[in-house]
Image (cartoon, one colour):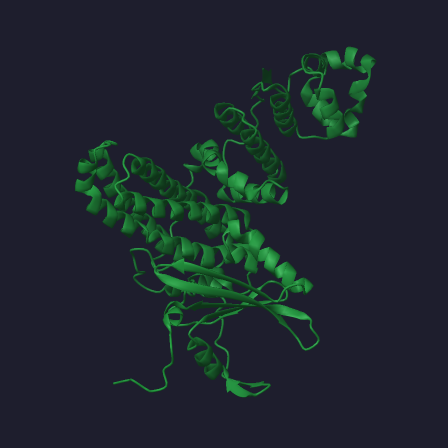
Length: 484
């Protein structure tokens, strides 16, 4: 089936009568099509371009929607063609067309058909448009997990257009420059792993694999440092984008980060245990996922961020990067914005009066930083307003989380559990939630406490995380000092 602005409405309804209900639902102005007389007179000669005009619908959008409806009802792929036009489309129209294409993609329309439709209707695309599209799809109810599932396919549809976009350039020391330097190092490690895998040729021979086992283990261990790259994105860059009301791509990318982290874990285990040929599939999927993430960063996320964020924003992104750390590279120098960018001043060291004494800001910070546990406080509006800066934090924190909704400070898969705790605390039905996990040879206790004022009003949630590995080993008693 081929559909265009010249297609006669009568021909279309004769071949696909179910489109009548669809069009009437689409606009009450299309109700006139239900008239047999109208169909046999005007309908015989009226093209879809005329019908769209009467209904007040943009023709390209209507064609896209009709194609989607036919695909959904019959399974038939529809090729949409239109007259060339040099007039740029309004942003809202482009967004609707993009969403229609992705909606069809999720419904199973052949990618080649959608690529053709994309080139005919839009032909080029800006990274910010993809970000807005994903944001809108999530807000309209499409699960983030579904967008994540087909994220690579989305990019494939738009890849030719995105490939024409220039990779952003940033000065040395700028957060973007550091991110891209890390990507170049990741590519080098991936190239080394790929070279070894080509030598092995998926051989099930464990003896042959064992010859490369040590080299592969070292390379995967090095590649695992990419977690620092992802942590800085999640804790430094994403919060600033959220201030500009861009959160959809962040949620999708974070979920993909977690997939990569899991694949790295599997790869380490399978290499150690000589799980051939299983390990080959894991490594191929891992390397492709990281390469695809690099492409998404440099053709969608970074260009969008560079366009949207101010120098003052980038200062906030850069503040706290060192606390999380860098993957394989260290910025050559500290980037400073140009003239006119706002810089936050350090607060004066005033004293606070508490119920049982008083402390200066310096004393309070030092006291909290020396506690053998990590503290985070979330206010009654679910915003992170404080975390303690201990010497060796159990879980990474950086200034980018301050003011951020706590739900967005956790991986998407944990959102429901975080929300349940907050809801129960706010409702007054629970006061404490605790968890314990084993991580990197340590036994970690994590407790959440509902914080209420003297009248019982909910004021926030306190998170306390502590390494209790040595505490669990304690027995008997110790009453003497044994420093010597």
